[in-house]
Length: 181
Image 1 (cartoon, helix red, strand yellow):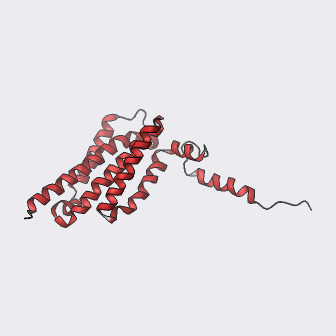
Image 2: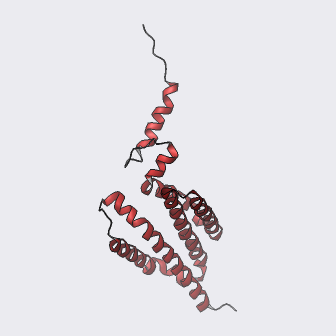
Image 3: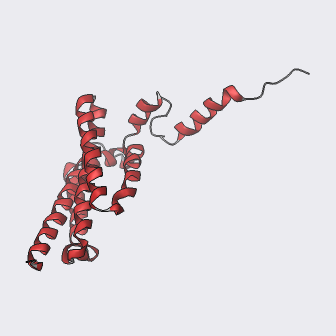
């Protein structure tokens, strides 16, 4: 029959796996975040590793996560968390591969992102809004990809200025002609 101890062990394994994916993602993102927003050059590797470790420890042992591990009815949330964390990791790896110029690796990591996101959504419908986070990661941490996708329309360090300039550029042909009176 069903043994509650086995369910708790599986839930704990799922929670640990999602915490490890989060740690791996933070190890990839924190040096970039440090370089982009804190301008500490070069970013101190041990600072980034320590920050990633502390963030994952807080996430892993925070009291709000207890129900996901202890309650058997929350196991689908733990599974969705694992797939979401894997999707975020794959997405970041895809973007880093694009920045490095490796298109094939970027495509493979992007395919993995789609598969992991689909698995997260199939595990629990609460994972649906997660798709909003992925473009936010792109805009905030990979502005050079915005240049790539918008044809060089954004300025370095100002990814938010590009949409306004594109609106101004796209509305120019529709401006009313001036007449000489």
